[in-house]
Amino acid sequence: MRLKKSFVIPFFTALGTAAYADNGMGNDWDFGHMWGGGYGMSGGLMMVLFWGVVIALIVVAVRRHGTGTGKPDQDPAKILKERFARGEIDEDEYRKRLATLNE
Image (cartoon, rainbow, N blue to C red; front, side, top):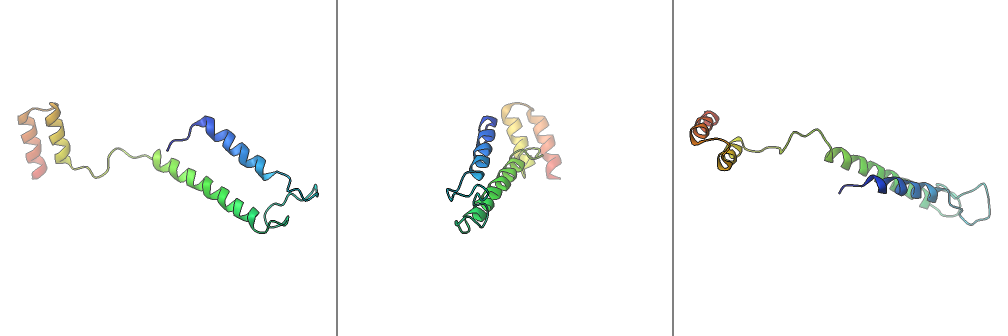
């Protein structure tokens, strides 16, 4: 799953806007954040959910755009066979390299 840049900024803006929403209790100084405001644990749970999403996005980005050099654990003999099948190397070259791999 790849997020587009045009999605990321409005998404986090909406999250920030929701954090400053009025709780409807009539107090201008109490927005119901965290454990107060008569909502019980909902503020704390929203904070955990928010940071869970942020951490998950970071993990996905690091895994997807890591420094991998290609397909892991691919058999060299299989790669050699594929190159021979595509015509990149001739039969003599294939046999010499296969013999070298099997030594």
